[in-house]
Image (cartoon, rainbow, N blue to C red):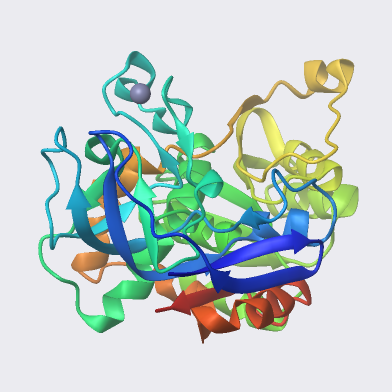
Length: 341
Ligand SMILES: [Zn+2]
């Protein structure tokens, strides 16, 4: 089968990889229908994070059709169209049952398997995969793929930021996750949504997803602008979807005392000073999003056409052209690239 491998920063190749097979009775093999390139794939691409292996199989987002299942799999079967999280989880341990499937005690990061490929082995299939009611219409493939990571992650950020009626929510990051956090905050009933963005196309999508205000300033200046827009208070909650020192600090500074920061940008070089945190008096809640927890809700909203997170994919390429997809995202020519098979 064909699959994407990263050999070094900037060096992505599509090549023949061994067909996956059932290794554990809890595994399923899926034929991938669509996959995509994640903002987090850019960290090793830019040389800012070491490769876990050389070459490293790439990709952790996926939708597809179940090909085969192991002997203990009962919730999905051959022919089902499925959406899964970027973290495989048993969905039965105490951590999973409390709603934190991405930190399951048996978790397997799908990035270690690599779903930018024709087929993928899904560990803990019963706990990880959710079947759609029927084979989805063509225009639902992209939004369902978004649910596999960026939508679920943006949703978690909005929930962690306590988005809800009467609330003002700020969103740091205008990539696919930040944009999905805006969509989520809107769905959760937030009254006002302040998006940080300097890019006209992303601002337009932010507004289409529900942003009521756009702030172009960054850092302390950006946070000051949020306070100015909120009678000096700051946002009730802020979703942070970047993962840098600047973005975390901006999120914390944008949030009023007693407010909530939902941080989902994978942290790179972030140092928080205890004394600063102490006097900010904000709740910090984040980490890898428990996408599996939200999947049934998200699949329903997408199936009803209540939300269309598929709009974050502004470039679609065949899997064979993955290298061009990485370049387009690295150069910010694309928000998010879908790879089709
Ligand atoms: Zn678990």
